[in-house]
Length: 139
Ligand SMILES: Cc1cc2nc3c(=O)[nH]c(=O)nc-3n(C[C@H](O)[C@H](O)[C@H](O)COP(=O)(O)OP(=O)(O)OC[C@H]3O[C@@H](n4cnc5c(N)ncnc54)[C@H](O)[C@@H]3O)c2cc1C
Image (cartoon, rainbow, N blue to C red; front, side, top):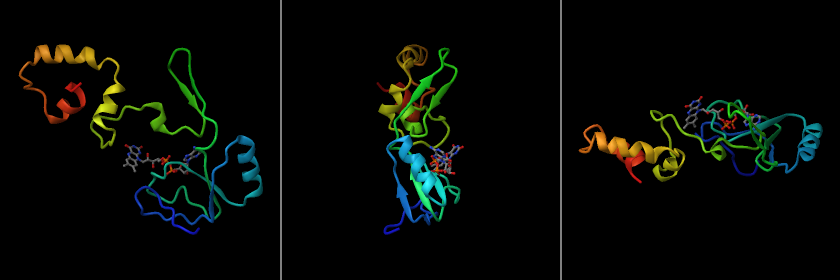
């Protein structure tokens, strides 16, 4: 490769000879058929060499996007080209995340319903803190 491609953390430099970005399933099939070693590269967030290959790294983000939600909302099927962020994920509140507060608040459609009793029951904000103020109580 001419310029180094690394994982998110920078601790893995991928050895791949090239990165391919097919734009259709047929292109992907042909690429896999003519290539020796192949690995898919997602967001490169893994810390191990699991996504590495001496052959071809394939990014699926050029493929058509498909999202199917079950009628009862209990399940969702997505194509390999969908990244988690495109599904509007909600993070675990106690884990490290980088979603800006304004973006995150839009992902909780019932947040306004929560704010009213939260303010009524705790008008002085005794049980709030800077994090809760920024991510939950701010509008
Ligand atoms: C800041 C940070 C926080 C994290 N927090 C958590 C956490 O809270 N919980 C947790 O479980 N993990 C966590 N992880 C780990 C991360 O979720 C995993 O390493 C995950 O595998 C990364 O996915 P990726 O799409 O970046 O995959 P990559 O690192 O690109 O690839 C990982 C593997 O998945 C395969 N792959 C990727 N995309 C596809 C696809 N579309 N089709 C087929 N195969 C594919 C690759 O070939 C490879 O084998 C965190 C990582 C970071 C950097």
